[in-house]
Amino acid sequence: MKKRNEGWFYLLLFGVLAAGLGSSWYLYNLDNSALSQEVSELKPDQLAETVKQKEKILFAYFYTPDCAQCKSAEEMVANAAKEKGEKWVKVNVKNATDLQATYQIKGVPSLIVFQGGKEVSRLDKGWEENKVTALFQQK
Image (cartoon, rainbow, N blue to C red):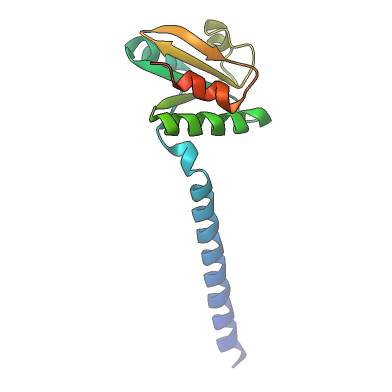
């Protein structure tokens, strides 16, 4: 009789774990949905080609995964882009020293606006909502 009860216990335990993991995954994706809209993650070697090919405006956000300020800055960029209906790209520059030199990135977070293959504006310090929004108003 004891073995039969153990089976139910393990089945119930498995069900609770599955429900917990499923709800955690759902909540994580729900919280980050604003960040995932209209953004592409580019590898450092893809950026130069994208900048050259893009005649329209390109918003490129540079970050590193271990940067605390980058997380709040990325949220500002995502919100401004969504508000203005613009697409943007993000580039992890943690191990890309050549890219940092090419685009003169002295620190992260940085947001550079390109148009016709050339830099037209940037924000690399003084991150405030109104400054980020102003960059996304450029056409």
